[in-house]
Image 1 (cartoon, chains in turn green, red):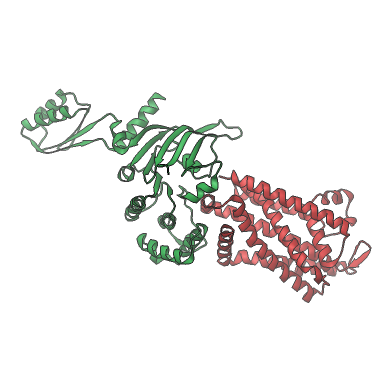
Image 2 (image 1 turned 135 degrees about the vertical axis):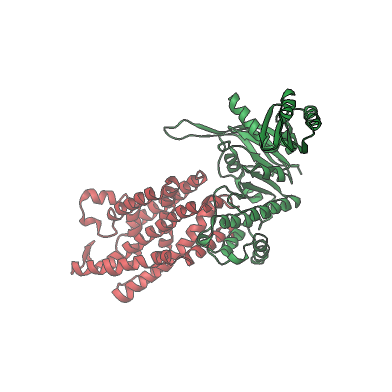
Amino acid sequence: MSDIAIEVQDLVKIFRRKNHEPIEAVSGLSFRVLRGEIYGLLGPNGAGKTTTIKILTTLLAPTSGAARVMGHDVVAEPLAVRRQTCVVLQENAIELYLSVRNNFCTFGRFHGLRVQEIERSLDRLSELFGLRDYLNEKGMDLSGGLRRRVQVAKTFMVDKPVVFLDEATTGMDAFNKRTTLEAIKEESRKGRTIVLTTHLLEEAEELCDSVAIMNHGTIIARGSVEDVKSMGLRLLYLSLSLERISDDVVQAIRHRQPLNVEIKNNTVEVTVREAALALDILAAVRETGHLRHFEITSASLEDVFVQLVDREGSAG
Amino acid sequence: MREVLAVVYREYLIRRTSPTWLFFDLAVPLLYLLMFGVAFDRALGQGLQVNGETIAYNAFFLSGVLSMSCFGSGMNQSYGFFVDRDNGIFYEFLTYPMTRGQFLLGKILFQCSMAVVQCLITIATGTLLLHIAIRWQFLLLVLVGMTIGTAGWFFFLAIIAFRIRRNDTYNTVINVTYFVLMFLSSTFYPLDRVPAWLSALAWLNPLTWHTDVLRFLTIGIGTLSTVFVEVIGFSLFLVLSFWFAVRTLQRAA
């Protein structure tokens, strides 16, 4: 059995409309997702993430290239692919005329669950996602956040090897977002492969084993979260909290030519590229005798994401 | 089969919670027969001359009502795609482990069972209240005709529903189509009494073929040879519509 759950090779999707220029939403995309991995597709709006998910879930046919899910070609064997996957689409998808209970029942039946299995799952998931009080409410009477909760919760009814989550936590409150993230981690621990897109990079940082940053339909960075973070400018942020900010302090910092200095009340935020410089500045400020507290942090995934996408934009 | 039955179950749940749709499915043809049919029957007085025979307008119109109700059922079911698209659930369905054909077959299986119930109610009312003499020996074939008719129109209208994105555009197109097809057919009047151009166009209309077959089966009007050709014509229409509907659905996302 291959270790690869998803394999995408030179994938291209061009949208053509009458009287409009063709739009190349995905251009020559290639990546692999290992079994049991949580893989994040990140990128700004219009980067091609949702189009990629739609191709992998057999909703869209690619213009060229190939994609295989659990060894099945998405074009030649769409049904086999759908049997191995379940999806939370970006759009809200809920039966508005049916109760929450019947939303679960219909989903379960479509995925071949027996009545007892549906009841068991319903019991577990309504508890986990806080839906017990809403089981008899119709979809049309639920708030947007609750509808999304139902949509995500029902995905966890079935035991498919690959799960696609396209902006799954959009519109959820903090509590439900936490529940969903925990559920995703739990499913991954069971060996399920999860591909997610999100614009919330702290979410990706928390969940993903690997990420790919997409822009203009192609991948501009990929690897583990740590790998991708290291592809940024390797910036370090030094935060210095002082009793008072004197000219001596400011001069001592600026003299060492950091990348950026920002002063807010009694705090100085300094951006540097090397750890040695950060320590040198720290030592210099300490000598002034006004230092109360300091903190050194590396760049977050979000910082790197912004840098990479900006760099791409400038290059393009 | 499990996949098809899952679609049927879902359609049943939706219809059960929506009395308006249920009313449309079951009662509208009956109202046509009892209001429009009865009024015309009285207005014409002596009945209609068809193929040298005089028959009551109610009897003539019964098959028109049945074929119209098949069209209406197909229209109603295909409109459901817009509702599903607005709810977002349409695209999720397309990711479920079933083929596009199974999805369409499930929908039509449910709608055909509704059409059969609708047909039985309409025929029972026509017989009991309007004293229409039905050829009971062909009742089973009438039900088969209703099933095929509903399926044919559903697949045809589904193609339009998949191709049009806007609800209001769909409504306009379908209403115009319904109007033109209905009056360019043998639904309301015998075609040997209308202008030649209208008659010629009506013979190209699948609604005419379907109505004529049902008329032959219910009250025995028409010739076997003509009806045979019309059965073949409508069957081709059904197969082509299904094929195009599946193709269009495959490209619907």
